Length: 415
Image (cartoon, rainbow, N blue to C red):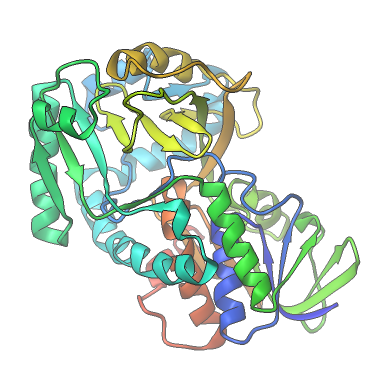
């Protein structure tokens, strides 16, 4: 089977790349071992985070590091046995989170986030996925006055420096927005720009259907069988051998499995995360995406029920699940929203967010191979940045002028 381009990985990033390439006239084949949106893109908070110009930094203060080191928090958990393996990644992550380094990263990262809704919007329309989308932002809820003051100050800076919309709410106002809340709050912050998704995996499926409507082909295959030929790339798939001039690695947390085979030593890590669905109450159902800032979990009204998503877990990607954060979060979630129904699944879902130590994705050509392209490492923002990455990769592959300078996202920064 001949193609112009192969895209490896059918999560939000890979499917978005495939759509953009196909729209630009490149005969594209999308390859995955599973169906579209069934891995990392399935289990998340379902937010297109237009406000997220500041990626998640590593704590800097000794007091914070000590508290996290106790490993009894709800917003972060780690496997002690994994520390020898992941310590180099964490050290570089901490280094890049220092104020001066972090400021430069935010300035570089912000132009990608700025286009997130602009790039999702036409795909949502063309895919007929509007029923999955809410356009009313999301909320940070504050139990603690100091956290509220810090949050309001940050929001003021983002309004000033990046034009991010937000509004401050009193406890009474937030209870009007969500009458089912069960405790008084110090206040809340409404991020007004983001969109939210009632079924993130379902949105990826709709984008895959759009790709096929555009003439794209989806096949089952194992990316680790990729081979470089004399005039391009070859991949054995279920129906034969697939050949193309260009191949894009968009494998999320599995990207290093392939890139290491090709000779690249990229500092890729993972942040694991969990979610559990709970029943919606018949009276006063949850209708907005809300984050409890004191404990770091999100409650989101998904198609399947109320999804509770945990904070980050630092562990080896394939280590057995330890969903202690969900168990720690649930009592606080029931205090915040007493109508939270019973658990709807036997065990929490677990996924892994692919991360780099400088908090920015790797997007662009592979330094040592002709026709090989990288698109992974989006950490918490794969759903947000999928179509942005799709456009940027497609522009580079087809020789169009990139909408943003891609230099800072090149793998060369780590080699």
